[in-house]
Amino acid sequence: MRSPGTGAALLAVGSLVWQAGPVLATAQLAGAIIGGAAPVALAWLTKLLIDRLTMGSGPSPLVLALLLAVAGGVLALLPHLTGFVQAEQQRRIVRRTSDELFTAVSRITGLARLEDPEFRDRLQLAQQSGQATPQIVVNALLSLLSGAVTLVGFAGAVSTFSLWLTLVVAAAAVPDVIVQLRLSRARTRMMWEIAPLERRRIFYQLLLLDLQAAKEIRLFGISGFLRGRMLAELDAGQRAERRVDTVAVRRNGALTLLAAVVAGGALISMVAQIGAGRAGVGDLAVLTAAVAGVLSCLSSMTVQLGQLQQALTLVHHYEHVVRAQADLPEPAPAGVVATLRRGIEVRDVWFRYGSGLPWVLSGLSLTIPYGKAVALVGLNGAGKSTLVKLLCRLYDPDRGGIHWDGADVRDLPVDGLRRRIGAVFQDFVAYDLTAAENIAIGDLTALDSSESFGRIQVAASQAGVHEALAGLPLGYETVLSRFFAAGPGDEAGQGVLLSGGQWQRVAIARALLRAESADLLILDEPSSGLDPDAEYAIAEQLRAGRAGRTSLLISHRLNTVRQADHIIVLAKGKVAEEGTHDQLMALGGEYARLFTRQAAGFQEPAALH
Image 1 (tube, rainbow, N blue to C red):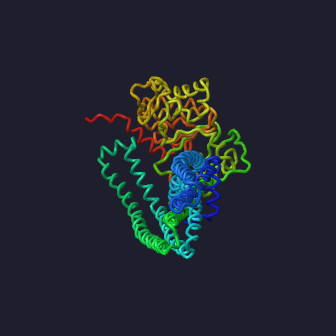
Image 2 (image 1 turned 180 degrees about the vertical axis):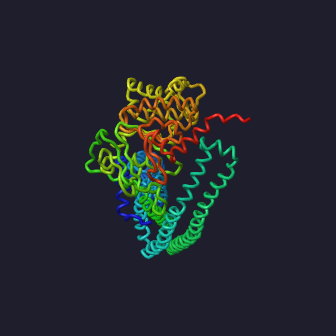
Image 3 (image 1 turned 120 degrees about the vertical axis):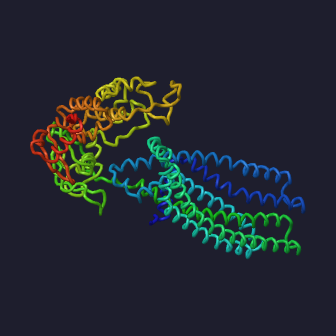
């Protein structure tokens, strides 16, 4: 793992913080300078007041007391003011980094990068560091600045008494700097090493809270197993943290002892000078504050320097994600995807989900003619769903190509292509949104006005779910979730869960809403969660909705595909058979075997005599 240059990381953080709030950043800078100067001012005012009271020389005691009160008040008030400024700046940074980070994630239009474990580790660290690290860097820099102001002031005070003592105190800080920098590097390595452990821990944690998984977890009694896995990942991560913390305690303890020896030596020296008449009581007060202040500042500054180095290293992960380019190449400039006129061709496509893994598609070639309904059938693992992902350009083929009216889809803008495709995925998502929003996911313009809202109801009616949604407590505004309130008018205070079949219909409605403007409608197992009557009704509605449209239907239930214009049978990632239902039945091949086997399950067995 290579970190970016310190200068580049500082520049990136500085730009982010300044853009988040320039006035607040300026206020933080002023607060750091005042905070650094105030202790020195207090020490000198105290010396002058003691000298005035003991020796009768110097400014008026009342003036000095007033100045001490003002300086003390400023020093007491400053943490409250800087705390408010820091909190407000942090809120703005979180807002900005969240926007930047998830804008970058949205640029990842494919799936391959999101399936990369190393990128997922970086993404997790980017989420953590993106929101907290900029303020950590700012706080460290401001603390260094404030400490430097205090250090210069107190060092000047000590040097007026003894130059050699100033050099000794400064030299004592060198081991501290070295130790803190080494500890920060160790912590940075540790965070990278435990990132996979943290992701797995979060996975088990979310799984234990997941409503979809709750049924199996409770039925099979595996909550203890999952909790054990979660705690094992947590323990492994904490062991790594504990090792670094143990080293830090030992080394910082030794440094503290060194600081105590230096401070003790300085005070003994000053007491000796006072006893010899070469210094006064006021000088002792200043020296006491100066030695303590110098050692405290040096210790704080070295700690801040270590944290700064660690934070700047973590900035690399945030920068890596937000600066990442799109994973799927697009034409420049991006053109417009023309309306489909001729059809889609899959030409000698080879694809696998990673180097070294088996080929899922191996030389697949087929055509989806314009305006025709093509059905895709085959056993599990034949490559049907993978072809759907390639058609939606969630991946690019390793070899060969997919052509939209003759144009390779890699030469078309991704968003423009996808706007021309509507789909019901086999693993569709049940969003914790309102019923209307769940359908409008297919085309968000349907939420723009009350007139366009009618399109949602039409799509729901076509999918056979309108009556169920209209009958919910708040109708289409009911939240389809038990995690969020359904709305202020819902006395129960919770949303509503749909049945599996109802969710299937909502997903179909989502695709039908999109199909109004789409050229290609993809239906991947659209009736898998429906009973026979509902399956028949939906099949008829979808057949009517596909009339005259280019569509691809994938189903294991062959009775739903027999009316397709063309049926393609996949086996081992390539076309095994193709034709109409009658042609394939006459052929007596794989399709006929599968169809006959399914049909036999619905026939009454012959009576036994």
